Length: 388
Image (cartoon, rainbow, N blue to C red; front, side, top):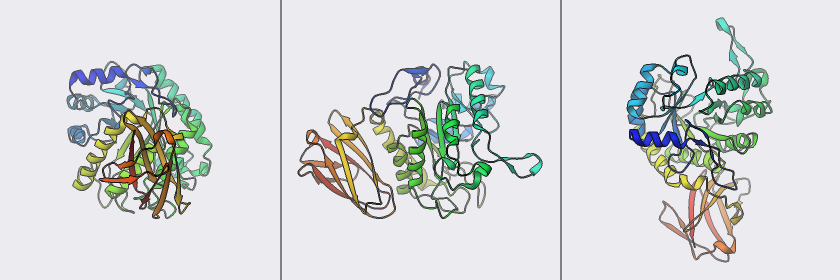
C-alpha cells in the first residue's frame, strides 16, 4: 500500500457494520478503518513495528496494540511500513490526532477478567462494565473521529471460565461491556487450551462470535482473535486446516475482522511466534488471500432463505453463510463439530442449476430436485458456488 492508497484507505473510514439483510451503511469515523471490499481488516496482536513489512507479506493489514505505546519510534516505524494501527490513547497519542496511521483506539486488554491486585496480593474482580463505558466516553470525547476497540476474554464463549473471578458464570455482564466500544472483539484458543472442556473444540470460536454478535446492536462491528501458536505450551499449535476452520467459523457467524494472536510463551517466549513457524506462516498467507478474495461478499445482501441444510448426525450442526453474486449463489459452510458428518442442502428453485462447484477442491456435485449432498470431516470448511 503506497502513501496515496493509504490516504484513500483512511478517507474511506470505518463504515457501520453491515446488517445481515443489507449492505454496508454510511461512514461514521473520518479517520477510522474502512469496512468495505477493498480492505477487510486482518490484524496481528501486539507486535513490534520492526516486523510490519513481514506481516504485510502474509496479507496482514492492521496492527492491534503496541507494547508500552504508542511511542514516536513505534509510529514512525509503522508510518515507514504503511501499516495502520489501533492503539491505546496515551498522552503522546493525543498529540498525534492528525496522524493517519492511527485508525482506532483501544481499551486495556480483557477488562472482563479478574484483575491483579497491587503488590502481588492476588486477584480482584474484573473492571466493572460501567468503568469501561466511562473510559470509552472519555476516549470518544478526546477524539470522535476514530472507533474504539474492546477486546474481551474467553468468558464471551465459555461460561465455565473461572478467570473472571467473582463474575465467573455471569454472561449478562457482556451486554453492558459492549456499550463501551465501537468494535467488540474477543479471544479463545481451543487448540492450545489447557482445559478439557474447551481443548480441541473449535466450535467455541463460532459460539463466541455468535454470542457477541447477539449482545451487540446491529450497527456494531465484531472482531475475533484467532490462535496461530501453542500459546502457553499446555496444548498444541493449530494445524492449517484447524486455523482455516476457526477463521471461517468466525466469519460465517458474523465477525467482520480477524486478529491473529502470534505470541508463544512456553517453552520459551517468542513474540513473533507466527513468523518463526514457516508452515503456519504459509497457511496464514493462503488463508488471508482466500478471505480477501471473498471479502466483498461478506457484507453483501444475505441470502439465508435460499438454502437450508440437514446434517447426520444431527448434533454436528453445519453453519452457513449464503450470499448472492452476479454469477449465482455462494454458500460458505463449516461443520461445528469433530465428527464426520453427512450434509444435505436444499436450494430454492430460483437458484437451481445442474452443478454445484466446490471451490478450491476441484469437485462438482449434482444438484437434483433442488438438493445436493456432501460430506464434512470434522470441522471442515466447504465453499460452494451455484451458477445461474
